[in-house]
Image 1 (cartoon, rainbow, N blue to C red):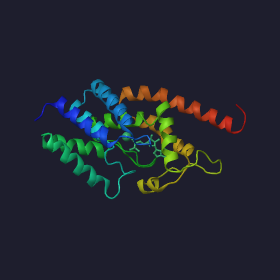
Image 2: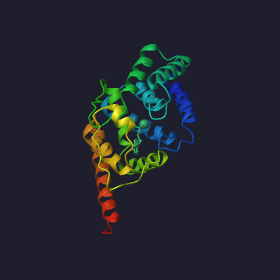
Image 3: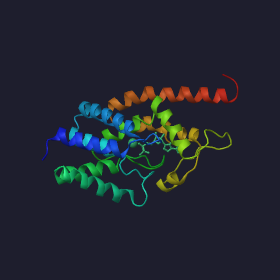
Length: 219
Ligand code: ADP
Ligand code: NI
C-alpha cells in the first residue's frame, strides 16, 4: 500500500478540487475544519486515524443534498475508484464508505447513532461544524442558496419523523435551528466533542434570543 500520509495528501488534493468554490457552506474549508477536528477527536478517543482522516475528507463527496440520483451508489463508486487507485486495501475502503454513510443528520426523529468509533468521531466533527459561530454562518449561506426565508413568525418549526420529510422540507433558516442545530449538542458521541459543543450551543442560544429581540425592536 502507498504510504498512509501520501494517501491522505492525494485524497486532500482530490477533495479540494471537488469542493472548490462551493457557495453553500459545503466548500473545501468545511472539509478542512472537519478533517482537523476529526484528527483531534480521533487522538483523544483512540480511534483509527487513517480511517477517520479518509472518512472526514470524503464525507461530503456525494452529499444527498447536492447529488443527483442515488447518492449512496455515487459515494461507493467514487471512493472505491479513488482509493483503489491509491492502493488502499479493500477492508479499509469498505470501512471508510460505511462510516461516511453513517455521518449525516436525517431529521429530528431519525436515529443516526453510528456503529463504530471512527464513524462517531467523523459525525461529531461534522456536527460541530454545523453549530457555533461557523454553524450560524453556514446555515444562512445554505438557506440563501436554497431561497429560504431568514425568518417568518407565522411558520412553526417541524420535528421531522422521517428522512423523507426532512429532505423535502422548505422551512426558514431560523426554523432550521430548532429542527436540527439546537438538537445536535445532545447527540454528540465523544466526550471532547460534547465539551466543545456545549459552548457552541450557548452561542447559538444567545444569537437566537438577540435575534428575536431585534425582530421586535426590543434590543
Ligand atoms: P449533514 O450531512 O448532517 O446535513 P453537512 O456537513 O451536510 O451535514 O452540513 C449541513 C449544513 O447545511 C449545516 O451547516 C446546516 O446548517 C446546513 N443546512 C442544512 N439544511 C439546512 C436548512 N434547511 N436551512 C439552513 N441550513 C441548512
Ligand atoms: Ni459535512
